[in-house]
Image (cartoon, rainbow, N blue to C red):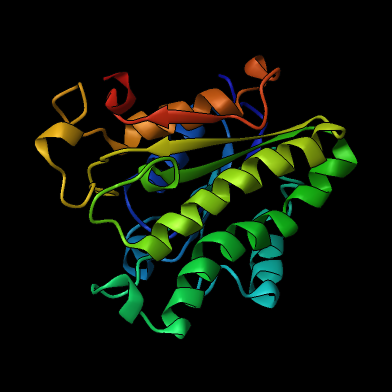
Length: 240
């Protein structure tokens, strides 16, 4: 099994991708600490010897994250793999009518949230000089998406810069940082106002398992010679 004797932290705001990542990592032998913002979703999961479910109130609260990460990894040691699947959307409405408070919340829940999770998981990786980080974003961070909220798109675009920069920062410690940019995913992300011209080549939405398989590839030490990259997973949207 690819991740036998490994420990993984999966941070998710809810949806199909984070759960699929946790499930596949466990199937491949990893012990998984699932930090989950979706309280109903977390309540429906049962803890096991290889799964710890930790409900989260706010990913960008440093005090909470420090305590939750410490609790999640107690007795397991440092994380070998960290996966983030953080999402946020402001209320529907014109971009220029979104309040400053809502704009900051979206950025914090996506950008600051990812950075805070890494703040309390990566230092132990640096001590070991080994580890993999995979950050899930969506299509709007890579290209224009008709109907997507500008604040959400800007936050995901920011994750692209974070992935490339952290790949260079952590590379000297033999830690890889990569991303997966997803198109329409069942139970996670649907492209707003999708038109006929924006349809993917594959006439089907992807699944959480599709995204999780891409995450597994990037997290695997067998493909260590890859960092600072973003895999586009969108059914061929960019093929035509």
